[in-house]
Length: 149
Image (cartoon, rainbow, N blue to C red; front, side, top):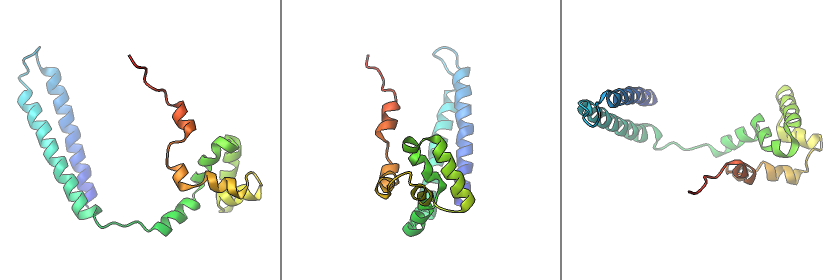
């Protein structure tokens, strides 16, 4: 119920954002007769968001604990792991592995090892959670850096 309330607050804030946009567009030169509505909408949105986040935190999020073993099991049995192998095995091979894993209800790791595509050590290295959850050098190299003026 509380997450739905937070969604409703977000919808109201989106409406206030549109109101602010239209009021800013409706102003003439440096004189904007709509500033009171702009101020009201922004302040109302901030108050509603603050209350929503506070309620969500206190009544819904605080106290939640992850079941680490279950989460680890879900990750280890996920077909999505095949994406971490893409840079090494290629798209075509990974697609075939994913299809087999899905059809045979097996793990990606089992199929990779069965087909001797990687050694156990290399597979473990590629599928390490800490490695998969941080940017890789390959990804970072592909991100264009802003040019200094």
